[in-house]
Length: 231
Image: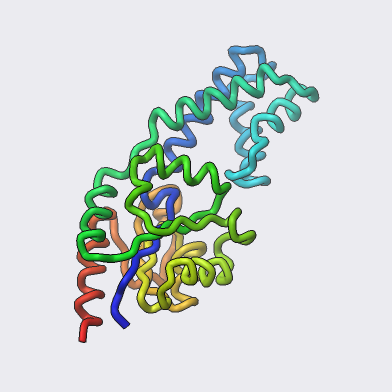
């Protein structure tokens, strides 16, 4: 089968999600302590990180739980201070990787259908794509909230393939995580390229056929896959 589409993970694949989120949370904690949260910044960051580890990065009540854990009360002033600071800093810093747009332009020139498949709340993930300035490159955007299950469930991948309206061997998947991107993508029959970026870039990897350090390197790999499958 000829390659006809490329399916991208979003966070830490099209932009550096980890560093932006970490910097935004650090500043949010600082402002909350300045606003009266009765603890040190260091302790607040540790408590917040524990909450994120337990409930996931897509949980919407991180700052609510932080305030409740430290003070034992519901304090809307402190919670909203954290939320506003976090979003102001995160979105002020939000940028695609330097070669993301160049990569998407080249793939579009090849006539490929492009999609995004991402874990997260639908409205939040769409907001990221719009703020990054790349939303118009994509024919399909699929979120775990929309489907009801997330990565690494192969059912989610099969749903994404159906939304792309292609066969699995007609799609190349590009993601940053071995466990949640590469392995399940290969299980359902897609070729997969791993981008060595983000907080999981040093994770052990014995399964990825293609590994890249810059997202633009995916273009040559995909071109080779396209040409090798041409009749």
